[in-house]
Length: 428
Image (tube, rainbow, N blue to C red; front, top):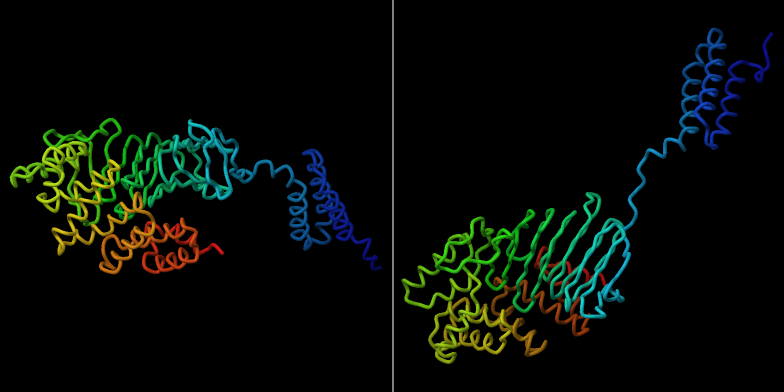
């Protein structure tokens, strides 16, 4: 006689499994799980001889039930995602709309993040918190110095923009200094590792702990030294052991030589040519020596008699020492006395940089326009277009700034101002 379907052994076994699954959402103890598994095995064993074909299906069903019941206990062993990075504390100032870090005293601003990273802006430094992400943050230094202590975590992403340079970091301790007037970038890496990208550094520079990177944009010069030997040696002395120069693209400054040879070679050439040797002094950082030499000979006489190289050296030093009038005079002398030289075109761009400090935005923009018209593919074309974009935005001419930004990205999609240009094109 055929038994009703609800009395068949396989039906009873499946009913038991359904009952177990219904209660599986409640956390089960190990003893309860063992008893449940034993009951399933017993039912399977009792029916094995009569209906062996059900064994695979029942075994799979039992496994599903056990996994579901054990899930709450197993989840404890799965690492939850890291907590999002947030600003935990700001000392010495406040975070304004747009991310600007405003100082309220004379001690600078310190920002502490939730996972332990700390950023300290030196007094007078202009900085921004550009972006706060779940896995890190992006900060920007417009002018001044800052120290960073980034908590090591391979899952985090931290970056720092300083002028046209980008520092990509993991867990590390380092100091950054950017002087927009002198166009000088300095980074001292005390612990960890970083990578620096930007003008004149090619595909990027990786630094190790204990190194100091100095970049002078006007000279297209990139120098890496050990922290213990940061002071550059004068031309007549042997440079400190370990100093090295990173190869850079050809520019108007002769900086493809190693630092260990640059100063002595320049000094030797200067001696042979019976000139002052200002190029060597400039490479050695002896700026005040150049100014003193020019003033002793008389600034008027120097501007009329100095070589093209020396005029540019004098202009650079004057800009570094914030003597805008002298820098302007040296650059104008270069244009007047050597009108057919490539440096006469370079002088137009540098006059724009000087004008940003003293003459105003309109004059600087006019000089950048002149440079771009006369040297559309010149070595400073990207910088001139980028500076025009920044100046337009600073003057609240956002429509013009966005138009220049689009033009910049078409010509220099990987240029030093590409990040700022993309940000402007995204604005309404």
